Figure 1 (cartoon, rainbow, N blue to C red):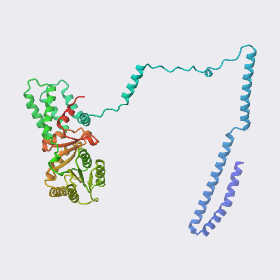
Figure 2 (tube, helix red, strand yellow):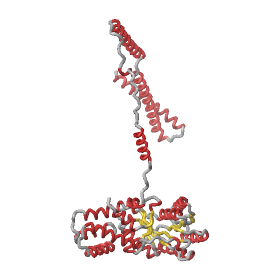
Figure 3 (cartoon, rainbow, N blue to C red):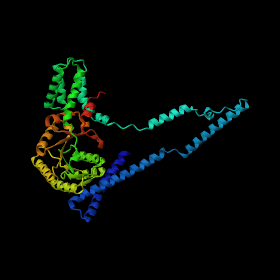
Figure 4 (cartoon, rainbow, N blue to C red):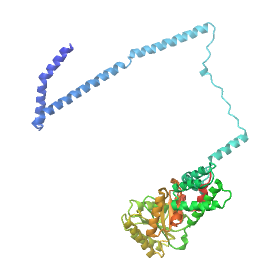
Length: 448
């Protein structure tokens, strides 16, 4: 039977397919289709129609199959009947048991109501203790002290430098030339620099030669005091009262945090009662002036700015004039980030320096170089070249909390003779701190 159907279907297609193609081709000709595309177009249309017919048939079959799966109403009624019969049988059994004298059946355990429990009585003294405990838990954690914040910011340097030194001295080793050689290697890898490391080791050797009984603890304390002595030479806080307005020009390469440092300084100076004015001299970096303006709004200070791409010297001129006219106490001028190797950009920085000195006597009173502590020895190279170009007078060392290369603080003063004015030990405004060598050393050498 299937073979007969197949044969009839094949014969039907053979006889009628050319007629359909011819009919569709005529329709395509009337529609303006070129002759060479009519046959192909007719076949494509026939194929699409056949596909649609097959899909419709498949959908019809799926619906039929789903209907067959649904339970018949008679079956549902039968199920209800069976439940009713079971219920009747259960009632009949209860009646028979009652007639036999067994009495009514006891209720199920789930139906027995549970006795209500009396609330636990708490003694008055216990209640007071619970209230006090709750109040103590709700109290906010006390804020970290300045020393604790410094210690947290120096955690990576402490682990890399002091942790290794304590491991070196903690094995009961004798303090001799071999131990000092290992200590020298630790200092170099912590970015103390070759020159500073040699000077520190030489001072240790002289100091220990005078000690009759030199143990590891004596060596540790001697190293601590030697570093403290060198850092004290670098500590020189700014005196903002020696000029009015006190002009600060901030310089450095891109990405070290110049604009953020300016914003934090502005907020700190404003909180001290100083009238601060900011100059957006970074006219090259996109949105640099907008970023400084946001910091100015946070600190409540005015920002002098020009359009993007303007001459930085013109911004410096207007900022100096505005600072004098508004009787500002502090003028902080931002500058575009530039590589210390770009001669033309360094010449432009010199021009800004000249404009400031012409408009405000002896300005800039501070040329603050911002360095990224995470760059290690490269920060020293930057400082050396910027110092030659624009007479850098102080250092702000940022991102000290994100590096294990905190030894660069010791190297800056030893190799360049520049004071470290500020160190950044976190993201907060108060985490940009005036450099305190005693606190720095105590926090660095603090034992866990």
